[in-house]
Image (cartoon, rainbow, N blue to C red; front, side, top):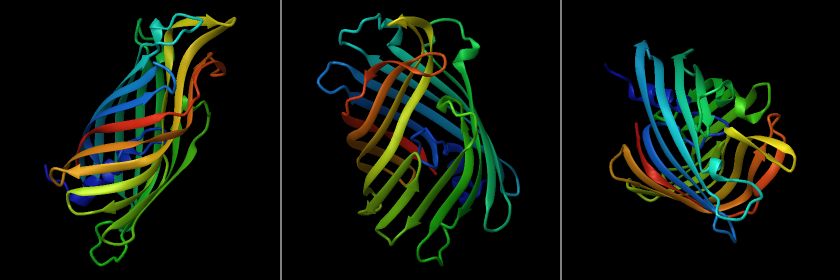
Length: 294
């Protein structure tokens, strides 16, 4: 099966767009480790992440995309808490990713995606509370490969729905990439914005700001201060610097480090109202991994 390189880049770009995921736009596979220690505490947050993505050409630069992503979140809660924390040790987030995209005309591509999700402690049999549905529709104008364009760019406009936000309506999405010159480029959008400097084909450095987080169902709910606890959520806003080393054009190792300027780790009830705050103190942030991209 033969794929056009530009078409594949657009396909994978569509596949990874999400309001609450820190995924690069053109990855076929990724292994990643994240770490946030709690300030002045033995508690820490660790996430192990793996994803794979496969595009299938249907016809005339139209693609069907199928993939999966697995996140294993480890909450090492060593401080003294007024309740049993053993049921919070491991949280699992499993996504099935299904998408389709095609060209509207020479300037624009349209696509949509669905992301059925399981987000749960998985200590018991699955129930309806463990399932979530995310998705979106997108319009993409990509001129990053136009040889005659002095400052290549990519613009993505869309609407996304994420069941874990608690908002019963779609949210607008905008992402804009622009090459300033051969060395400098930037990307403005959500969940990540950056300013990148390319030293050579092997090395680049960037300053970034981004969002990270999750919401998951607790299969063994507890009672804290007379209130039922059914969900756990983490939301993080972070800024810092990132470094990438390119073993080849497609295989890249990366390291992002910085400091959170908003961190909120909370236990919630069925209505997702806050019941108990596990952590809200800003802390060091580390994310590193290996990715294979187009």
